[in-house]
Length: 134
Image 1 (cartoon, helix red, strand yellow):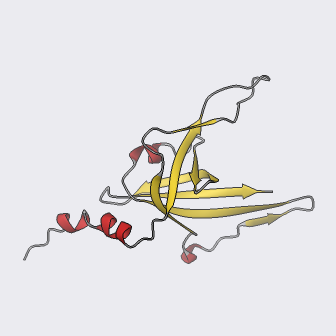
Image 2: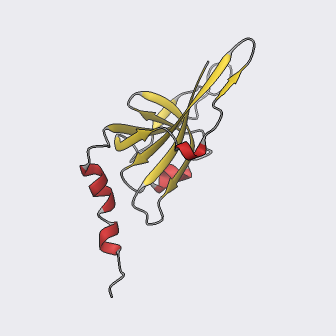
Image 3: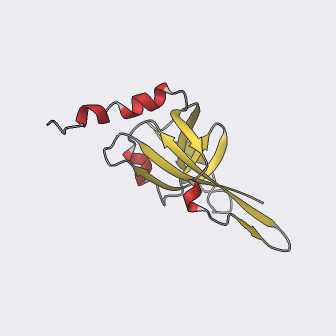
């Protein structure tokens, strides 16, 4: 009995792409390291080479992880929009960008990169993103 699934594993992401669900594009960006006139960070970002216009599927996080995503205060309301993004490939550089102040631009919307992980076979990358607005 042949239990080697290595050929089938390589077909998973192409099959997901063929479904037509990956209609979004994702670009990862890092802080440019520049400083403004006051010496504070410039808040400028640059695209990461090899991590631009990646076909992806943008979705809300799983219902199995229900979380409170809104904090109310008398003066303001901070709403956090969490997203789960499936990238159609294995991008180890995206995983290394976690905790480095990187951000993701998905279809023109800018999100903070909270985390990134590959699947167990190194065929895809998943991003956990957050949009904060006041």
